[in-house]
Image 1 (spheres, one colour):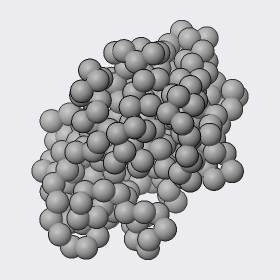
Image 2 (image 1 turned 180 degrees about the vertical axis):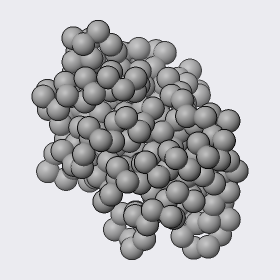
Image 3 (image 1 turned 120 degrees about the vertical axis):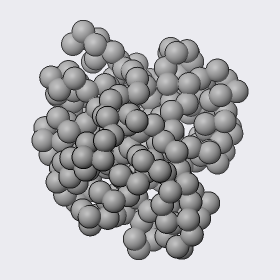
Image 4 (image 1 turned 135 degrees about the vertical axis):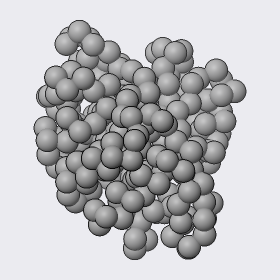
Length: 246
């Protein structure tokens, strides 16, 4: 039983330096919703120093809304925007003699890809243009995962330790109370359950099952470092081996 532990970094929130050693993969903001050349260099350097795999955390070009607003972009423009973000981060990574190992979408783009084939295909086109072997980290049972398989892109299932799910196994919108879980005990319990059985309760109280290879903890969640440390310790005690998927 091996589980990846990832977090969104380089976004200007929280203590990335303290969080990085607790992870196996880091989703680094590429400048569209957050981050710049300096933050990318810092994040890549920290990832290298802690043997953490680097992922491109791409987004709609929406710094004002932190990438959490859905934008209506033609598919070609979205593909170009995503490709540019991957290339920017990869240039930083290669300057430090490493590379981008996978892609994960952020915020509204992540959620749109989960249910919209055109959006998923636009992101997948950027990935295949850059590196046909690059894996996509995404929501299990989603349109994005199915389109990735059809396009010959490796899709890796991700679950969230600090987010609530609805009965359709989708993330509860952040606008709804209880969508973000900050209680350490609850986050730890959900993380261990997701890693061992996959069976958790939805926000409505229904039993759902989510099988994932990677667990996400958000770097901008209050107490993110404490949460990550507690989750990592609990996973190891439960016999879960931690290791990157890429």
